[in-house]
Image 1: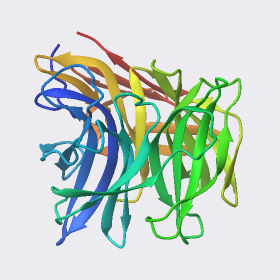
Image 2: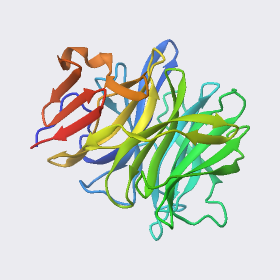
Image 3: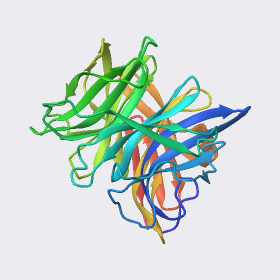
Length: 331
C-alpha cells in the first residue's frame, strides 16, 4: 500500500490512537504537538504501547520527535490519555496498564522537562478504579477545566460486567489530588464499552463524544449533547458521528481557538509501517447535529459536491457530510 501524503504516519512501526494534539506558543513561535500510541519495531499492535510525538507548524507537515513516554518497570504499557496546560505548564495523564490485566488501567501523570516538550518525567499514579466498581474496562483519561474555571474534571471510559458502557467522573482542585464524583452508565442504544470519552464545548453547548463499541473489537464515534448538573452529566439522545475506518477520536483546539477532532485510521499500512491519523476535523453545531468538516489547512485538497466534502489522499479517502464522516482505505 502506498503511503498517504497528507495524513500523519510514522517512518516505521505501529500507530493507533492520536493523543493530546495541542497548539503551543514558545518564544513567539507556535507549533502543534501531536502525541499518539506507538509500538516501535513492529507493524502489529502490542500491549507495550509508547507515546510517540510529532510537531508541525501548520497541521500539514509533520516532524518526528523523540518518543515522549515508554513502558518501564512500573507498567507494561503506556496507553491513551490526554494533555492539559495549566499556566502554560503541560501535564500528560495516561493509562498505565499491566500485561496480565490490561483492560483495567490506572491514571498516571507526566510533566515536561523542557520547553520543546521533548523530555518528560513520569510522576505518581493519581486515579485508580474505585473500590467495588463492577468494571471490565477502565481507561483513557480526559482532563479538562471545570465550566466555572475553578478546578478540573477527569473522565474515564470503560464498561461494566452487565454489558453496559460507562464513563467515570473525578474532580480535582490542582491536577494532583482527585476525588471520585460518580458514574454515567449507558443503556441499550450503545455498545458495551465507551472508550476515549471527552466533553467538548461546541456552538455554545456541551457535547460528550465517545468511542462506542464492543470490548476487543472496533468502534465508532458517538455523541450526545449534555447538560451539566454539578459534577454530573445528563446526556440527551445518542447519535453516530463516524463510519468506516475511523477509531479513537481525540480533541484539539487549533491556533484560532476552534475545536476539532483527529482520529486513528485503521487498515492502512506499508512496508515497515502501519496506521495513520485522520486529517484534523473542525466541529460545529447545526441544530441537534454535531458536524465535522476538514480543517481549512486542507482547503486546496478538498472537493465539494453539494453538501458533501471529500479529500482523497492516496490509499485514504475521507468523506464529510452533516450526517457524519466516513473513512475508506484501499490498497
